[in-house]
Amino acid sequence: METLQNVLTRRSAIRLASPAPSDEELLRLVAAAMTAPDHGRLLPWHLLTLRGVAREKLGQTYASCAGRDVNLRRRAAAKPLRAPLLIAIVFSPVEHPKIPEWEQLAATVAAVHTLALLLHDRGYGCIWRTGEVLEDEGVRSLHEVKPGERLLGWLYTGTAIDTPPSRPSPDAQSRLRAL
Image (tube, rainbow, N blue to C red; front, side, top):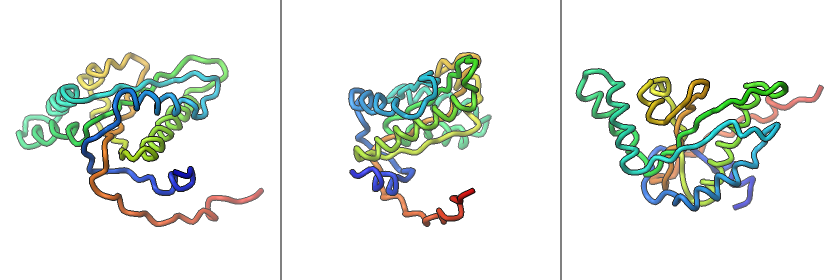
């Protein structure tokens, strides 16, 4: 796929099914995503894959965050099952005298967005999901998030069931000007 076309056609895919990339294919895509801008090559992030039982465990942890309402707990437990592969994004900032944390966060987001574009290029769909559960100690523990690290969400990944709707083209001229 041509790069410009890939960027213009990528959309968040809400409904996902199998197949998802294999571990081997995902490793190749992550290696390519690691070429995203990263001042100092600090790689201030890591990714975790959740498939099968790991998604079920995350669902059980979600359910424990949902309170006592049985219906809320059931719906929360089903959320990680919406895609065959979840890729957890963990931001791990590095103490550095010249590279501030905000720049490291930008590098992390650049790598994840590059991964999303690469997944799209390979015919997969994904959506970056977040929520209040990111701060839950049970969720952090399940993902082995260390002090000083932040769980930024999950790329729910698989094959898009529906073609995501097109979106209006923003006015690029309103965002670009000369000084």
